Length: 207
Image (cartoon, rainbow, N blue to C red; front, side, top):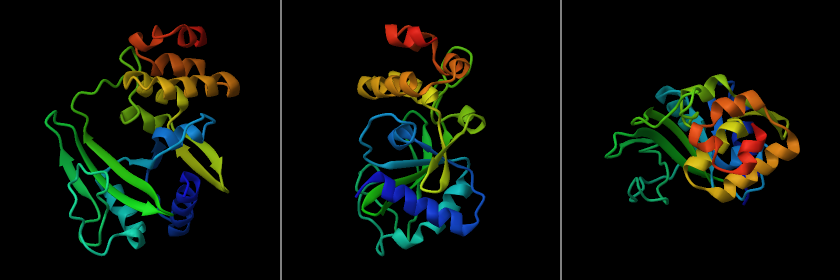
């Protein structure tokens, strides 16, 4: 199954629920919705607080496993269950998130809240805007999709994240989309770190 079927199923459920949860699509699906050419492996939905994880976990309960997963939280095959719809996990760096994961139309969908970024750089004045950070909520972009308006992280911010992660394939796809479909130059200048701004001639030419 494809990401668009999973996203449509989620959006249909969310709209019918009348919830007012703050959520945003990040990662490759967020990029594809903005014309970047990629093949998403999962649908990543970030939320602003743990209460939002609980709300969306309730919304997605029909996709829960009936028995608690025996997989480790580190295992990509861990999925939410009736007994454990989400979990909170901390890493040695201090990075902490609360996450639920379901298969919708046979496609993995994750709902995530990050409560401790463990010092990941996130600024609009030189260090770069982080795709999982505080600035995304005031910079949400809405994209039309299957009669829904889907909130996404702008490509300008996603470019910074993929340059940081050294995902050159995705950075190139985002750059191509920005050049073909337009971009916000001021946002790009804020989103990119000083290092990313000189990472390639293509990036420099957009600034």
